[in-house]
Length: 54
Image 1: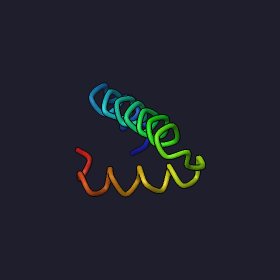
Image 2 (image 1 turned 30 degrees about the horizontal axis):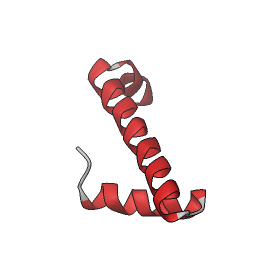
Image 3 (image 1 turned 90 degrees about the vertical axis):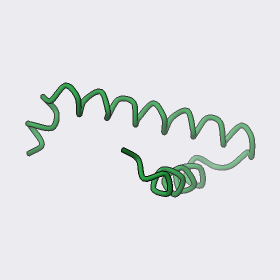
Image 4 (image 1 turned 135 degrees about the vertical axis):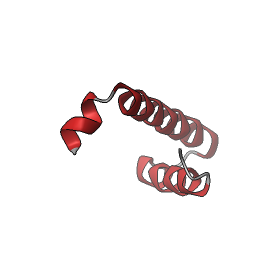
């Protein structure tokens, strides 16, 4: 399953976009609120789950 996921171009692009969103979110929140990396990860995860990342 993992191999197929990684070789599927569509999934790969989705994954890259997901990582980009997460890192943008981390940067934004850590600057805005002065949060620690861990706290920011937690908040971003909640946000992405809320939005039902698709």
